Length: 511
Ligand code: HEM
Image 1 (cartoon, rainbow, N blue to C red):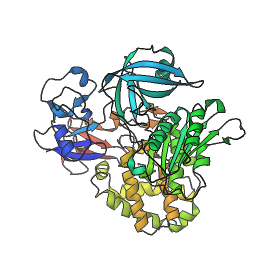
Image 2: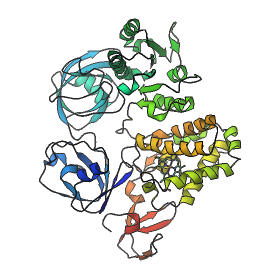
Image 3: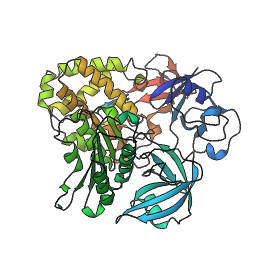
Image 4: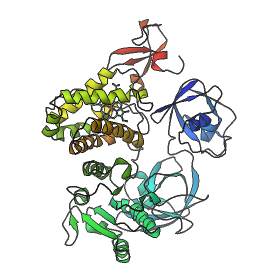
């Protein structure tokens, strides 16, 4: 039996079973089609371990540590991750380009194969040299045979698309993907849409999709830009508001005030200090800082996590953890601290939470080699300092604490739902629960990611491998099973705990 680690969960594969069969059997979502190694749909990244390949496959589909699940049988334990965006591509041709505002362009793209998409989903566009970026689709499938994206001229790929790519230029795309789109389950709910900059295109398409499907509940559309000249969908959205009494368009500028237009941060206008939002669905598309602020405000407003649909974070950008400044800026919460009896109540809640975590099939694998007492103690130090405002926490901030962990938005939500259950069962006041969970929400951007990263120390990302597997030059003893580790054998040093683990206890593949 092999252990397969994938997106925060652990699965098993029976001897001879392909990755695709094993992952599907246990409910993991894996794209697939041909099942014989030719279409490339089931490509996955092999981060650790090795596989036997059942048949020869096109080498371009297995470059850079990628394997095809349908023809790969694990040789021992393996760690898997989502494929790099530049893989599994299909050809697409640039048909037309129109400038919509100073820095924003509409691009029409014709895929060579039928593209089955929903307005608001995103595709990764891949240039010939492999440069890839995600863009949201701003048209509806029924509009035309091509699809449209809105691109803000910023960064290498977007500038190339807006200025240099020729009409007729071939590139590739991967996707579509993403949960930020309309669905019939949203029909009865008021929709609250917040977009900044070119993010308005995707949300306007989702609103159009919703209205075309007969959405009768209110839709509030907030578009935040620096200056009024960037309200590039003003005419279209005003016309939509005229046609549909349940659709409201609320533009907002952040630089010079403009009469008749809201001024400041859209999150403040749309979400903060408003009541009665708990039944809404929140759709977010645009700047990561806006998405983060909106998620925090949504947690405070009591909008459940599963009703916050956000454009995905672009994993291709270099990480810029801001956790230290967030910790420094966070105000104390004396009311919450008092409700936690200034300490003992926090310990009790964390003990109850980690008792559940260590039993949980999705969360417990992350805590391999970390004792429960350690987890409670570290979390206590972090949270108590935030709640009582002492600012005397010397442990790792969230980015570095989770640097090697592949945690998806969905897994983050799963952990938060468990946390919320524990707080509710303990009888903590709903308002205090919302404030606590909003604090966690502030660190989502530092914790969620698609691949392990090195720690960032003094602003420099450290090599990942120095923190994991090592081969010792002298014999040692495993801190888990107390068996001897012979010099030269692989082992894992948990340097924060100062403990050493043999290959079997550390789950190293070639044990
Ligand atoms: C799915 C979500 C999460 C998972 C799977 C997770 C997992 C872990 C694990 C395994 C450790 C121990 C690391 C080690 O010592 O090697 C850890 C440490 C820690 N986590 Fe999380 N965590 C999650 C979310 C969060 C959240 C939302 C917060 C708070 C905002 C948080 C704050 C911390 C802190 C402060 C530490 C201790 C840092 C230190 O070692 O000094 N975690 N987490």
